[in-house]
Image (tube, rainbow, N blue to C red; front, side, top):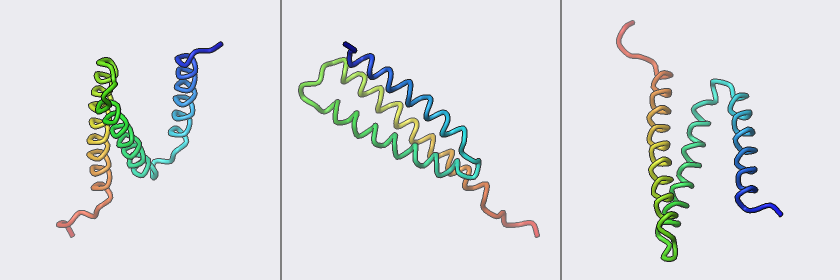
Length: 98
């Protein structure tokens, strides 16, 4: 019989390979919308981690892992928005020299 850990690792490996293939096939023009989508997924991770931390019957380990998940996801969200903003500024017309 397979354990939940083995199934979780198997799903994680498959998701990693599928994610790499999907991102590799994206054209450069679609990187900004893709970055926005990953920000939304990270926001869902933050909400899930907050729910885990706020649970009364959560163990100390799950609370620490939830804190680490929140920290990593918020860092990803902020960095993603900064990169997206920088990319969008590259497409704006510069004023001044004519």
